[in-house]
Length: 184
Image (cartoon, rainbow, N blue to C red; front, side):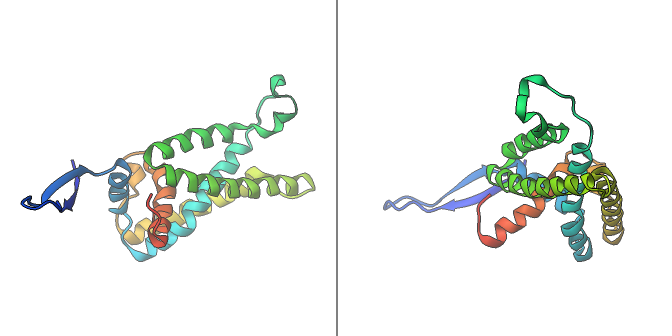
């Protein structure tokens, strides 16, 4: 197990400083593992563009899957779709790793949902279907991801463990937290 080391100094006279060993949090272990295949600056830049686009397009594709009418929902029937379940399950996973990062991810998903709703409105007046737009974005973003990993010279982390598909977005958010001094 990987550990973080902290030195604590005792203030009482005659006591020596002691070393307290605290286990590294699971989220930090996952970030360290994810970062192993994301060291090249071009790959990191591509990830800053492509990971949010993949989240957007994946949610849009899932959002587009027809959802059955549930009478007990009444007037709220249109507010629940398959993406709601994906958001709930991934939000719970993120919360277990880091509440702060899960809150930031909820804000990001809210912004993505607003864009998807606008795409739905556009499709209703003759624009392209949401699934078409999201499908194109999804394919292009994944091509970008693989170009980034070709520059890196390492295979993507999710090929070893599928949970790294969920780690990518919060890995980016954790850099924002570090930049503004927010403890995640």
